[in-house]
Length: 398
Image 1 (cartoon, rainbow, N blue to C red):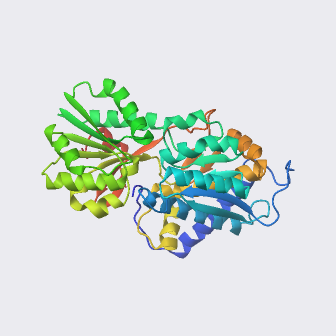
Image 2: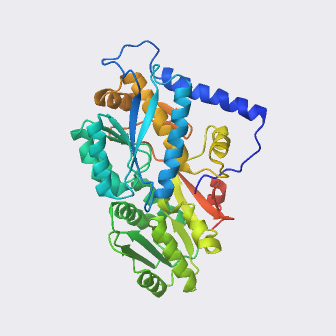
Image 3: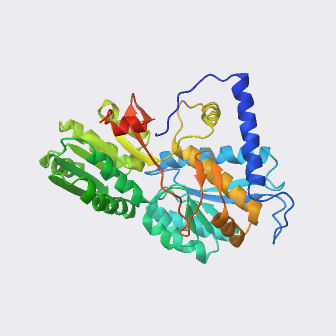
């Protein structure tokens, strides 16, 4: 997945730095917004404070769900090691929606029945839109670290730590427009809220950045029906594309790229954020090398966090869901410390918080959105590497 870092040997100094950073992060969430001893309108639970998380541990986005959960577990460990929230230990209760919107709704109802006032999730835009109407009705604050559809701005109890599709789609058009000699582009997108939202913003900005492209073809894939990959690749081949953009989930993207390779197609491949999964290099292989992906900004402000992750999960790379999952828990812990463990208290804190996490600052606007910040990644040697801006601007990798 995206945001990979080389694994380095640990020394007594890196261990010491990790300890200091963990302490600093946990102290900051306690005192950064409110001082110790500030009375709350309602007392905190005496035994434990629970957050809910609705994640896909199976299904199309399972690779991402696992990453978010790992980051959340690391955050809970750090918070409890520092004494919990005002002395009360924290726990995250996980619900697996398997990337199914109906299961997301069932999970949201279970969260409501449990009395938990805040949920982290969902991940897929379709899943988040399925549960967003319940957030305010159930007096549950919803914080998504992944869903990018612009339609979520309609729900006042919904916040997210990722930027809207409006900006990602425009960025795609601008970057692709910077490639010289492109006459034909094929965009393969899902016929769901995620695909439509990104496609609309791409089309809007195409008028500004792709005016010299002779042919832009859109191929829609029904998310509810089995994909006819032969038809997709045959349609693609008829257009002789110089560039193919995949706005699909990894399972569809992998199938399309395998079939395109078998058909002898050799375009420049681009993928939306959902395609920046480790499934792509693992299942497509060398044919996927050089693919460009768009992701949420994920440069770590705490580099030693990656080293700690490698040790904890015996990994050699770290993906952006890990750090976004970590920041989501730390952010909500700060809000509960500040405003209490209630729907109203958490919402008020989110509206006013100025939080600096391990992936940078998070400040919410009136719609519960954050300022846009995106990275480009490239597949090299089976790993997603973050591109530097000078590489992008000079087209050194395109």
